[in-house]
Length: 338
Figure (cartoon, rainbow, N blue to C red):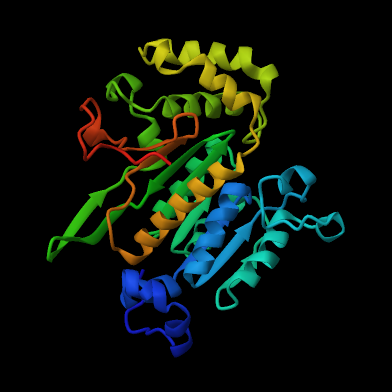
């Protein structure tokens, strides 16, 4: 993300004065020149978009051709409650109109199309790509296209089901700085792709791995095998999901207790997002994207899980370098309860 030589305008400096005091003018300058692409306008993504628009990202492009419904309104606060307003419009159009009111200095626009159909060069226009509400194959494909570019494009997936949520991050070859006491330390992290991360054998992961990680992989695999779109499962699918879990655990030599039936039942019974969890996951994703753009502060590497059942947020580093290791602080960080 090369924005050297471009300074903040007087208007930007005045508007973002408080946050400049927190993370500095250089971080704000990078943020104001960054271009973010978002696919899938559900409640969690709406929260994320609100956060980065208020923070002053340069531009935000939305993709979601689905027509707005009353169900979407239940978790997405960017959709007007008046059916006369949202009737016939796509989710991306409605969210775009609302987000423009949050911060007129941010350019918010809409693109039409399936995220999988865009060529590699399309993603070259962006510094950050966030995808949600898409299939396992789409996640893999978009991540692969971002990796093919000559510049580094940060890639994130986010998924929220019932009162559970997951974030994945691929910052590729990432360098950043952080403060330790009175000195600034330069750091370097190497990220795996989404495919590389989920391809690590389950038996190679540490004993205390988040159960949500395994459960989300089972749901993804089930939706893919049944030809479903993301979130198109119900309680009627539970027998098939449990059958697939057993098969995957056997193939991966993992004790089935690591993927509780009760957790899978929650994930398929209610795929609608729980608004308070949307706010938490969207807030975490927002701060991680800001860190990735600014190059300041320890970034997420590379999965984040949250379950409102116990109120804990957990970061798991799932990569070849950590396979088979016990969860020391660097590999597994349990955040404070929400």
